[in-house]
Length: 158
Image (cartoon, rainbow, N blue to C red; front, side, top):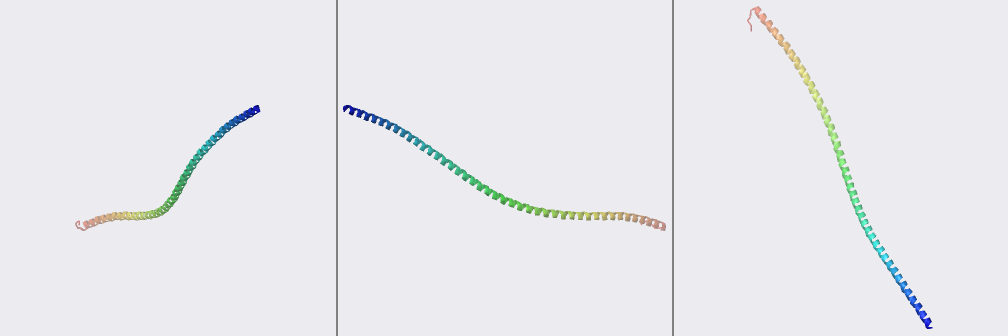
């Protein structure tokens, strides 16, 4: 019996040792799993933080793009307004050009009329000069004839 009791104690001691070893092994496994879980949590938090930063960056980019789109839209509206103003100015300038061309044509016609009138006056003046020359020659001839006649009739020269 004493042997049986020693044997029972040995079995219990071995069982306790085995339980201690299993406990230590389980504890080490749980510590590793806990450490792995903590690392996964930290990695997840880092990834979440990185994602939040990326989301924030993307939101800012979206806001910038929306601002640029709004500015571009306003610029487009301003360009349309400016284009309409330019088109109105072009229409006005075409009207002014048409009026200027009409005035130019009227003035050219007036110049042609004045040139024709001047040409007529020049021609009339030339005719009058020719007639004057002819008249002066006739006066000269008549004066000579009168002078000759007076000499023949015995009058002195005038």
